[in-house]
Image 1 (cartoon, rainbow, N blue to C red):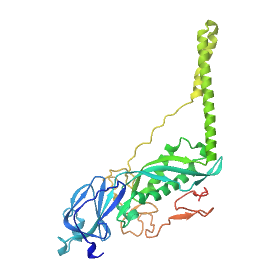
Image 2 (cartoon, rainbow, N blue to C red):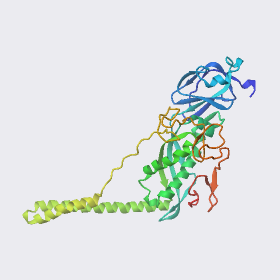
Image 3 (cartoon, rainbow, N blue to C red):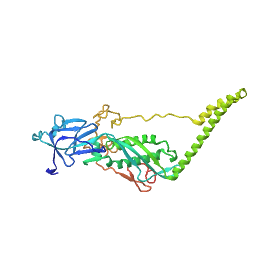
Length: 376
């Protein structure tokens, strides 16, 4: 960039006016001349990452920071030349918003194919919401943002929604026999689906904090079949209720009829518990899902404090620069091969794969085709 694009920075800070911005770069264009001793203010739910010549140097947590070599040891090597100790530093600061971003929407643009055990091949629409937050700012910048000066939830919402739909389609293919068995399973499905999606989101330095399924809608004719079954269930419950009321009425009559009906009353007393059991059935309580920490060591999987830089169990560095796409091992910034599995990190990973049955495009890791429902 030319001299006209230089910005001299003495006070560096950022406030999000929209509530949906995930990242903001200062300065927005080119590199800024950050004066020696400049004041960097990082607010709660923010992380500031200092970049110099395209490389991340240091991540700053909440607080007020003075940009000097005494406070930031990594600057000592950069500013070691005689005239640089007091000269401005050509650099950029990326502010990452680490709050929870709520009410992001996911849903099917086109109906997803599902092979129902009773109804055959049908097409379903699904909708819901989810919440995310950035837990690895450097990984988020390197893999998702790149050189964008601003990055908001609307820039990633559509892609993450496609990932959720693909994983939901795989989950239904493995766990759902028929759409008629679907009612009442949304909460359990959302919890299990969230666990499956954690790795997809962690690949970009994100955590999926909440996932909700609002609806999975079958075609109108299938919906009518579900409604008919619900009506039959109501009639069955009414039949049980009539049996119970009849038993109670007979018991009351036996109590009022005198000694001649003592045998009947005694018999009814033994029958009532079985009628009660038949009418209401046994109910099991279910505990809600336990709340687990969203931050854990990617190497040993032990849960650690969110602001920790190294794992207290295995010593692994928690500030992630890059990850192996094959085994998810954290790798050094300039590594060409994964130290765990040997995967070539410079090889471009495919974004999608074709269904061998219908030829439609699906996410690379999808198990079932979104168009024909066949296993890939």
